[in-house]
Image (cartoon, rainbow, N blue to C red; front, side, top):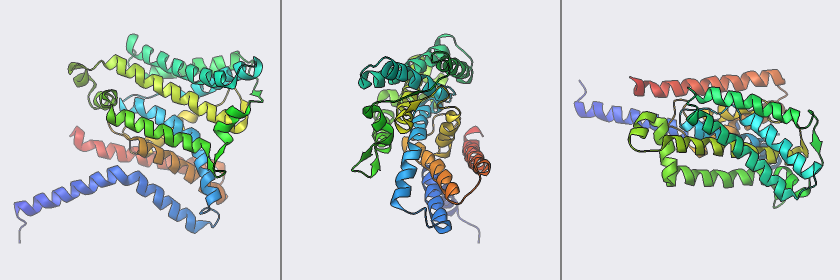
Length: 330
């Protein structure tokens, strides 16, 4: 018997609902599935100590990913965050270790340098009218890395005070890594910013349709400058955690970190086409990468094969994003 129009509409609605659920919770389902599989493969995975280790390992990438989420929401990209991290920590090392300044001053310098480079990225994109942030951030990536090498003669700086070390190696209640607590605090703040402020709504609007946002009266240039400044600030904060973990600043710190951060954003459900993505999805994406790396290490998988596994996950996430965008294009 032929289906009625109502039945067909109901089936279509169910399909849409299923797609919406998968789009919203797909990354979480993937993380839970990964945890279950690794728990079955090795008895060393499902332990409190290992989970705390994963949380600590995920912190730097999570902070970078939360920062680069904002440019991606505007259909942009920020390739300079790894190099900004390196330059920020070298400047902090010069101020705190070489010059003997108060560690609070050093922390502020690290964050200010990161935000300053992000501001430059935003100004290059909006005032010079470069065609795509890929160009401007690729340029500042090389500049920041070169400066990090030049100002210290490519020599590392070690011996940071306790306050700075606590950001990367301190523990809350002697169990939970302070670095991950910091990630949660930042994630909550960023979630509130994106979902409960006009600027946050404008960021999504620009990613959805930049020209329409401009015609509706949104100051697109101002929003983009804010977006890239926050991305740089988060790179400085991630650098602070890195230095706290290893008690050393080195010019090549953060090399290649931008790739993992962008991967975490996409795995977490954000779209490279802009306008789609959440803070919590990004955090889950960073955890997926950390859990995968941790599990592969416990299983004794070689480092080169680990890169291949993560590469497959990234390709799959981007392909899902492409499939999700097809109805919009058609």
